[in-house]
Length: 294
Image 1 (cartoon, rainbow, N blue to C red):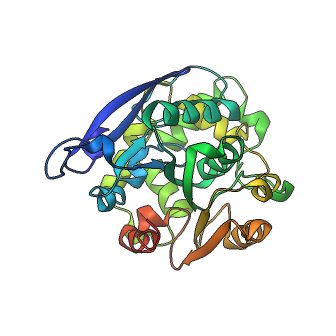
Image 2 (cartoon, helix red, strand yellow):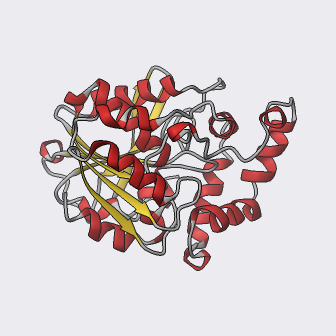
């Protein structure tokens, strides 16, 4: 996936209890990399879903490269990171993300994350607040917020049927037409913003060996939880961003979640004419909004 990274970004690896986690950071020109370790860390975490990877943030993090040490990992089971054959659970990601932060940072970290991963970061920030400086979260959700499931679109018995899971993943995530249709129909508010590069990046990630296991865990709902139970416990300064046309987790849900902890959630930025990934759909706008705070 290195070919989808911006110029000057290279690949590094950190070992976790579930295998190697690949991440991207500034390594070459045109960026200055002298005293890189002295820059404060800025961690970008991608969403879940077929073909997801750190590419999701690749149009955003170059804007912050002169003031921060960028960390943009592929989570375990996604992108170039290891894809262990297992039934993925919430604890797998809480553990490996925590391990990544402990091994890559020696000071509190600023995190930018999206969707279900943003929800997981809320849980980590509650259990280990000392790790975090601030959270900037795009459409954070547990996909079962307030007890209302949002993500599953196929019956669970169908997903769990032997051999049918391979067929479902192959038809839905491993071919260009399906990936393009999914991005246009569900993630982007304006299909005209979808580029061939975005389709290629998602397809490349989806076609990695054993990529189906993490994706199907998400589809089955094995990673879902009720984020509304955790938001009131959060004590780390947070800002929410929400695409006004986001599917699965609509903006009304976001406003309802934000109301649960007004003291800590300092702002709620609605982004017009964007879906669940405004930072990929309109990166320039998102950079402007994020730059108000970091």
